Length: 111
Image 1: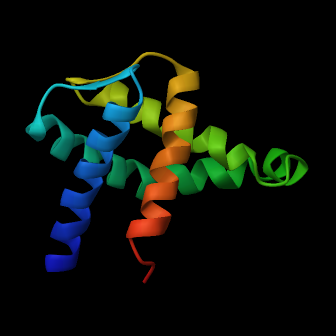
Image 2 (image 1 turned 30 degrees about the vertical axis):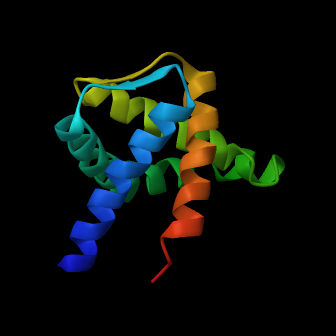
């Protein structure tokens, strides 16, 4: 339970970090960041594996780089679902997803 709560808070913090790095990303408040972190977790747990399976041929041809596109699309989907969380375009979402993935890889240990 504590681990889940910490991941939720750290995910919200990471969203604030990417909003500080990228001008095209805005978060209206702390509650919005927390809600976006929950929605991102749900989207990544449900929809992302399906998209990865469907896009397996193009991911194979691109040597795995298409996963970055999927991550950007998932971030844009979260921005579309959460009021108060805005992303200006796909390019911003793409590079923000890369930074978010790097933050998760460095600061959150895998189970």
